[in-house]
Image (tube, rainbow, N blue to C red):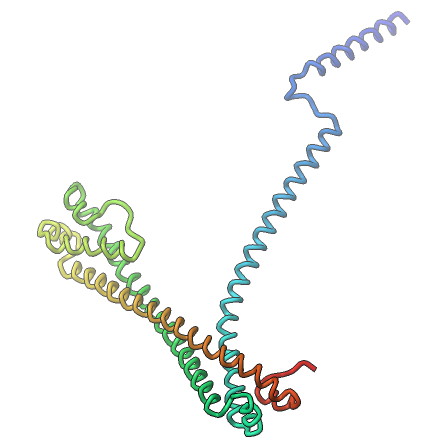
Length: 290
């Protein structure tokens, strides 16, 4: 019994000591209460889900905007073709149907006026066809420019790499050929940089001799220079085609607007002149709601 009493006292002391040690733990080592740990985990989970959701929404909006713009650009051209066809149906069928001609003539749309509308239609169709042709030529010129600059740049970069080795330690020669730094990325910058390289290499006998020791003789330099000149010519052609394509679009739009104005008035009059004969309206491509 005496032993049991001492044992209980010792156990109590150990328990109090452990409790005190636990209370004396530094703040960063103390465990949060279960409720606080649960809140912290829930808060972290919420932020993770929020950021994930936000990223998904942002990506979805960007994709939606891209598809909308693409759809608009495609539909714009399709709408022009569709409206040209509608105008063609209305004008040509009006000219080809005597009953319709007589009905609309009472409201000022004589055959002469219908033929004026036909002229506007022909002009708009021609401008539309020309616009497509000009853009086709622009795309072709752009492809030819890309091909020429890719080939010329491949040879130029090889020459630059070799020149840096051949002219190592010749600071004046390196500066003359502009061997330091990055290569220019714009068309104008690239053309200027490559022209300086080949012109100065060909005009300096010391540089030519050094480059020749590494396999770049005068004919190789002339070949590189000729390819740069070809790029210049292709760029000039591409810019010309680009300007013509933009001008053809403006001309097409002006002709199309003039036709739309005429067609809009004609359709409005045709609805009045033929309001009691929906079949004749359908001949003009005008479908009235039932």
